[in-house]
Length: 442
View (spheres, rainbow, N blue to C red):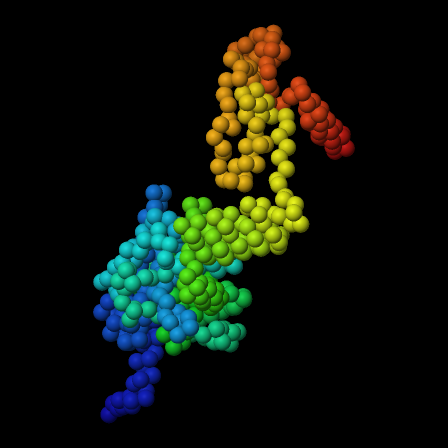
């Protein structure tokens, strides 16, 4: 008699099915639509929130992955598209650029315009996170059912090492793919994960073992070491929440926001679209520039100005300038030894005065520039003219010397102030001596 084979019981059958499913996931690829939807309702729901991103500028077309994320702030949900900063670049924000996204297994799409003052947008590259978020508004017409939730910060710790994680991705022009892996190493906000990814997967969300809550975002792959890198999203979430709270508080206090062409923006009180009352001016990178009182677009009253190098001034302002104990602080302007300055002066232009007035008022006053005080004015770029005319044989040296002696102004030599010229010669001589001495020693 041959050996009899018994059928596996229910527990063994579940183990076999689970192993088959895990093997399929570990192989990386569960192709889209039917196969992905049939595996698990949770997976299917999560995958509907993953977006294929395409951004077309005048220079390039950028493709990548992103995902829809909802964040609770003070019992109110706010909705965002999240991806990598190298996909949705910081310099694209608040420009007339459109982001095309496809979601719900590419059955639905939306066109998001970044030239919108009411839309919250932020890059976190300045704190070391390769993350950008763009707020989704009602007019974008994306159902709230498609938005994922972030994992809680308390779940992010070293215990996650070797924990199973899941990633959904749109690699290049391929279909949506799903893979399982694990975390190998954690370094503050960054982590290394062992999950199969493919080119074009930047911006893909990474889920914890529950496969529901987003804990990180995939950013790059080191093919030589077969390692993947990602960033935890909770530091960005904390900043977003703080920003939203402030924006909502400002709305309640009838505070408005103005964005300027250079990327700087103002949040505060306005009068006829001018900065007037209490308000804060921000640099284009989101850091505070000035916080305090304004009158008709000018700093006036109490305020704090923070320079880009971190130094700051706290005190009184008047007419956009520091003002303390009745003293107004002006910027000292010392124009010296330039051909153009002497030329302008000859034609009746008082540059230091005009610069000071323009700094204070923002405009050059009418009538301050007068032209044609002389019929002719001879300027010479002496060294370049010597090099390209005499040296190349286009002009005789004596002709050049005659022109030089008859010139009214030069680039390097000021007949009225020879000090800088002699200092330049001394410096060049010292450099030559050091070079010669160094050559002798060697």
